[in-house]
Amino acid sequence: MVENKNAYNVNPDVALGSSKWLTINHYNGAEFNTPAAYAALRKSGYTIVATTPHTESCMLDDLPVDKPIALIFGTEKEGLSEWAIKNADAWVKIPMYGFTESFNISVSAALCMYNLTERIRKSQVKWELTIEEQIDIRLEWIRNTIDRCHLLEERFFKETAAKPMSGNS
Image 1 (cartoon, rainbow, N blue to C red):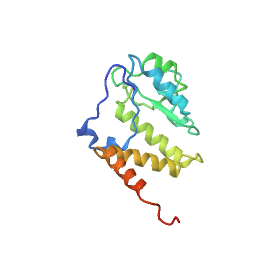
Image 2 (cartoon, rainbow, N blue to C red):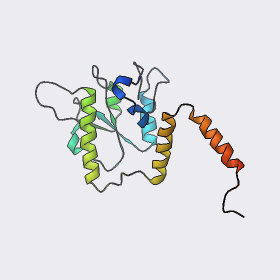
Image 3 (spheres, rainbow, N blue to C red):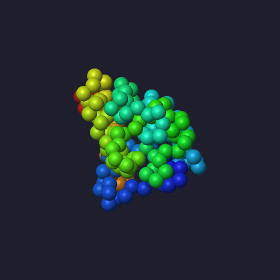
């Protein structure tokens, strides 16, 4: 979540607790945080794809799904910044019909995620998480749901460290 002008706050009436099951990275340490977000995404192996109707974009159906993709969306009012568009690795547009230029952000994200998810699952791309990745993410999400979980973890590790391992002589 890049927070250049506006801070992101989860709306509990909209999220209804589902935000605990998402891994969200916040970039809000400077006045202009987009370069830091792009650098972190590239370091993690992502191709940065800006969603914009204004450049030489490919259609969503033509976007390759053989590598990790980070879709970048702008605000509903202003869209993506010029820097975000210029420094993306690729550009994609969502098919539009009628007089409007773009969908609102939630519709745009939903359309993109549906399209890409369907195409990835039908492809030969190895997209599944490893067992270790699943365990790590599940543990992170569980920690997000339990108040003061660090106290439970400390107690668990203290108690298990004090007990001898069973089956060892």
